[in-house]
Image 1 (spheres, rainbow over the protein chains, first blue to last red):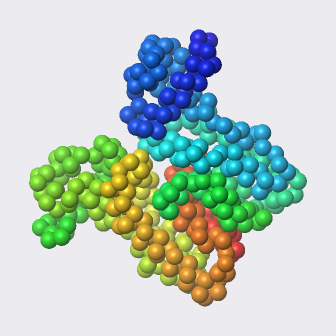
Image 2: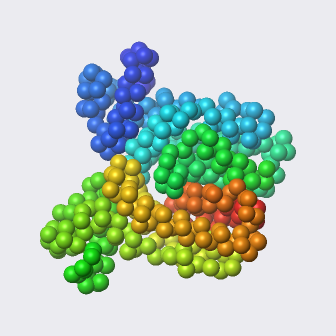
Image 3: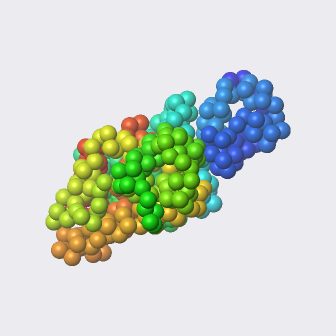
Length: 190
Length: 190
């Protein structure tokens, strides 16, 4: 990643291919060979750019991430949460669900992937959500001692992950809006 | 399963082995050969008793299931939810988390397993939770038009599934009690 020798367009192409393969076969079955074949590149190039499979996958995930929580500041908690879930359309959410499924088992069994995922994606995301909630507390919208403040990430991610299991269908923006209004805001006392 | 030729003890042993293998390697890598080897039984016996791998795995999951939601009726929502989460100790929850991880990807890619899991586990569980909530509405504890009533399964399962991702540690009963008090009960207006 340091000292990029690929053009940004080529890099984006590679990342897209990695995510496609991840959705199709899952992390365990994804090989550097398959990425090389799909993208018509050499394995040497892949290993020169990225240290290995976990780094390549995490870089691809990070590159894709369309929503920067830090950029959202609508002035209300409801507005911020809706902005979070409404930037993605149904097709994107379906793709995100496929990605989560593709990563599923591996996150817990592969220490490198686990660490990379936490450092690059989960922790920055949590920090963004914390900042959003701290602003709401600062402007007096949420009481500082509201116990649910600690569980907003659990609620939001949980809504996304559990719908396929409970309702046998993927999360989409309109479902997430209903969930925010029915669960997240009342839990926060809003 | 119809016409059982195995003793209940032997059947329980087989199921325990299936769940162990599932936790260790995940659903995709679990083979009837491995189950046969681990349990010193013939593959013919396994196939005679269960139609195939999805049926064997679902039967094993169902056999293990320690908590019958239908049996819980403490007289309050908080009491019922706490009874649900407190029957399991930390070790059991860790095992359950390993099981969920082992099933992860397969639930979505294997139609047989998906259907069996829905019919045998998820739908009865949802029905039990619905009955619990209906009783709470009937005795006037929860208003019938509370929007969060539709999302109690999402909240409870979401709490369990998201803690490893958000906090990098598995759910345990004391965490789930905090979550119930901070999120589920306030969302229900309690």
